[in-house]
Amino acid sequence: MSSNTVTIRDNRTGKEAEFPILHGNEGDPVFDISSLYSKLGMFTLDPGFRSTASCESKITFIDGDTGVLLYRGYPIEQLAEQCDHLEVCYLLLNGELPSSKQLTDFKRVISRHTMMHEQLLQLYRGYRRDAHPMAIVLGVVGALSAFYHDSLDIRDPHHRQVSAYRIIAKMPTIAAAAYKYSTGQPFMYPRNNLGYAENFLYMLFAVPCEEYVVSPVLARAMDRIMILHADHEQNASTSTVRLAGSSHANPFGAISAGVGSLWGPAHGGANEAVLKMLKAIGTVERIPEFIKRAKDPDDPFRLMGFGHRVYKNYDPRAKILRQTAHEVLHEIGHRDDPLLQVAMKLEEIALEDEYFARKKLYPNVDFYSGLILSAMGIPTNMFTVIFAVSRCIGWITQWNEMIASNEGIGRPRQLYVGAGHRDVVPLFERG
Image 1 (cartoon, one colour):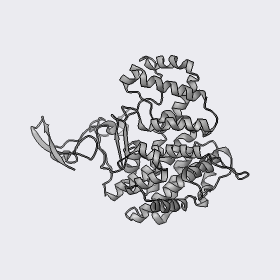
Image 2 (cartoon, one colour):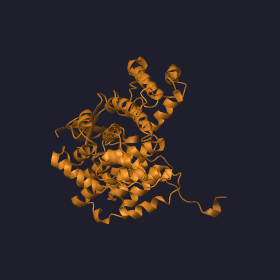
Image 3 (spheres, helix red, strand yellow):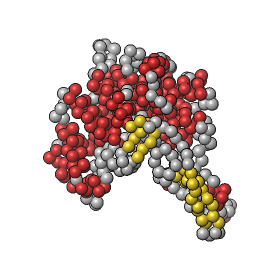
Image 4 (cartoon, helix red, strand yellow):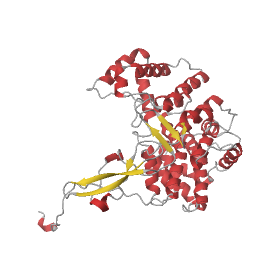
């Protein structure tokens, strides 16, 4: 990193202090205010951390203005086209893409960790059958720390590695079991001869009484969804994992906290909202009615799946899933699916209409992922669970980076706006 400085002056006292400007390998420069309080006796106020870098990281880079997403420097488009999900997992964990032997060894290790402790399966039976699958996943992920005591020393790199392998391997098993429990079907054990996404689909849809063969097209689509959601810089759930982990909580507890954050509809539920919107529109003929409503500043309706808090250009992940949506619907025989036709027309309008261009409301990854998952037969209450399965590699990688860098415990400050100092009046005098 190279650096120069910025000077901040306190006009109340005339006191000045210099702070270094830091330049990363990509993206905008930042100025380091970690010594602001000691130099000027003040803090900053940044609700939602919109202008604050909470850490240094080597994992993911986003340029929202130009629509760029890089994992360890590699463009997401190239990774989704040329790699499978476990290759991307290896890349995120280790910083480099694996050789053929490294990938073979990595896949073998992950396949040996896919099963859950048998007593963990008993935990599912304590939930109501109509419990939301995310509630179950949140609880079971946290419970892993009660079963795998041999990998909880966070200062031991080997323990962190084993924990990472367990999280990556067991999340599909945990998620699929949550779905099976809600349907009343028996749990399906993982099969080590199947690929990662293929195995997940098998555990979701197979039953013991007949043979089930996973479609390669659907497996590849699920694999792409996982790659595209693997990490996304310091979003709400990732920041939650890092903050929880900064207290030296065990990795399973920290990732359980991330699951809880992801569950919020403002974070992980967007693709479900897109699907509901497409169903509400129903047909291409009704699109102008909804477009008109979306443009009306007095109408609370808004189109879901357009625009992104980070991307001010076409979400690069959406381009990949657009083609994937066609492949999936062709595979299952729904090439003329009305929801796809509505989605295609909406995308066409968004890319040509001056209003959408001015507002930078481009289709995002959620626009297509909900459509693909629905076409696969996955219920909407499982959409966020699949997001969690995909994102677990990003969470554990970000957690591992934070622990290895010896960051201190996270402790944001606040601007207190409550009552000033006052004395307690004895109860008998309060009337």
